[in-house]
Image (tube, rainbow, N blue to C red; front, side):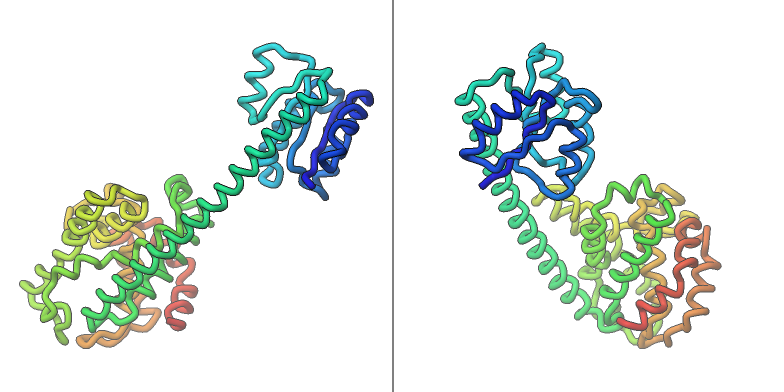
Amino acid sequence: MKTIFVVDDNDVNLIAAEKTLSKHYNVYTLPSAADMFELLNNIIPNLILLDIIMPGMDGLEAMSKLKVNTRYMDIPVMFLTNKSDAGTEALGFEMGAVDFISKPFSESVLINRIKTHLNIDEIIRDRTILLQQKTESLQRLKNSMVSVMAEMLESRDKTTGGHIERTTAYLRLLINAMIERNVYLSELSTWDIELAVSSARLHDVGKIAVSDLILNKPANLTKEEYEIMKIHAAEGERIIDKIISQAGDEDFLHFAKLFASYHHERWDGNGYPHGLRGEEIPLQGRIMAIVDVYDALSSERPYKPALNGDQVINIIMESKGKQFDPVITDVFYEIRDQFTKVGSCL
């Protein structure tokens, strides 16, 4: 049986409402908004009937307090009132009320209005749950497809085993540390962090366009080979742009494009493929630049040994303000031990 709170400072109204509704619902009658909030600590109703004009906290104040609390904000509220001017109703609906019922109310009107709104609310909740389930299913499918694609890319590049998993872990670590320190928070607060981190797994998708002979060369690249290798950033941008043209610019693809295209740009403007400098470089690229270089330096390759932790950290710090965003580099330095710990586990 559904539960309804009736909040009114008039005993006659409370008695009438309880008599009318108790045949169909669990009814709690409360003489003030303060009593309502006290009971809400233990019971969450399916609907609240809330008087507007009450001493102490009135109905509009109570409504404001309900809507800023995530625990209560989705409870449907119907105002009980003998104040039926258009301004009050407009304000009530703007605040989130689902209906107004004039006092004194008739039994049939009260029952039918409540039944209608509870049915609507149940339908909305059921459809919301279904939509959430479908969204989660699509997200799992998307993550699986990205994982398979990333694994296929990594299987071609025999020299960088585990690079995608490690950079994904480092990226999440660095972004979370930036948020904790309010670094570029105005932009990061608009990100879906898990979506962004997942999309970064495609940052090297452009390597599809690079020959296996160059990609897997067990020695340092020649100048000409290095120039060919550099095309992977522009190719990554082109590939994801092509997907966007067919699938639409979803957030996931938007993030993936920025990670792929800009992770080899440099703070001093000497990077590629666009030669951007400073904050002209999208934040995705500036974060990924540190993560990508950290993994490259600390990992063994056929043509070089892995550098130890202090060597890697010194190289990155020496590149602060040259290759890397100086503010993000400082955050990296503060959590350098966490990078080392994560890297040793992967």
